[in-house]
Length: 159
Length: 154
Image: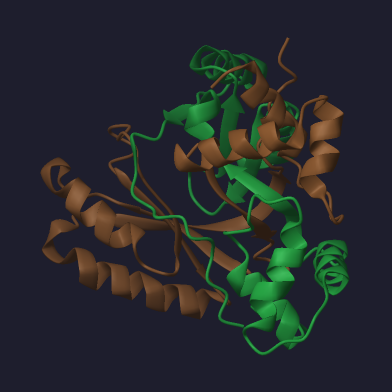
């Protein structure tokens, strides 16, 4: 990733303009050819530096008001296999392995679960419990009480 | 309430907006193959309307945080009476892009994203210093999610 890629991120991270030729507008801002911009973005997509290009939904406004951060304690030697199974479930929006923080925090697998209400989320939790089976030696659900800040990724202008 | 067209756009275009000169024209063509009859301008207007109503926050690339610097998830066990004060301190950092109050002893959870791992650690150290509370740092070690956008079965 070079300076131009960083400039492209800065120019597009708050969204593409909703006009006929959005990439032309961004290219003009960056003072580069539109072809170069599209080429760079295509490469970033292929390298998975861009995960996807699309509409970013606001789950809350769409009625998916319940989300729980579920955290699970699974054996280290099983985490890859279990993590992949969990990460493939349709109601899971994020699934990460993170370090334990002992003794207060024994959990190493994180999955964000979404539903229209707490009951629906609770059903999803049961599905995960079934999936992990005997490999799960503990879990907790952390429901969000309040969003205090939520913005897209922000990169500073390259200096 | 969402129209049929809005539902289709939300379900189909959380990913895969093409990197071409006229992406909304391409979307109109694809959507029309599914039985709709819309123009490029109508696609633009519909996305604009979804955005104005707050149902989508933007249309554009979603970047993989790790590839563009450093990031981590961190938590603090905040005494209830200090929640507002501590949350405000945490939110005041431009590197904090998500900050949630959650129901747990660790009740404040936030994501720090910066241009380097070093900057992430500096932010955590400053938060500890300004709040006098210790921060549990849980950086991602492995991503198991296949990100295809979020399925909306509305």
